[in-house]
Length: 99
Image (cartoon, rainbow, N blue to C red; front, side):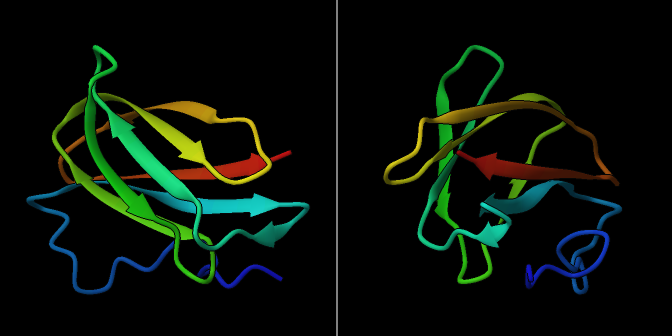
């Protein structure tokens, strides 16, 4: 069972009025993947930020408004790219399943 909050990672304490949030959960075979690396790439493919996933496979970025690529890297898995649009006041939720 995934440890993520139903409906996504909790945004308690995040001022969504001033933030564009990109967050999600990385899984493999339905189980959370801890210690994967998730990168945020801008619209030109340039590296912007990287975070490791938590013990429950979760990650979060505070991004500027616009189109981003989220790239997930983990041992024994092909990189997975997902495009996402971030907007101030909104949370862009991603579910990344590794094979």
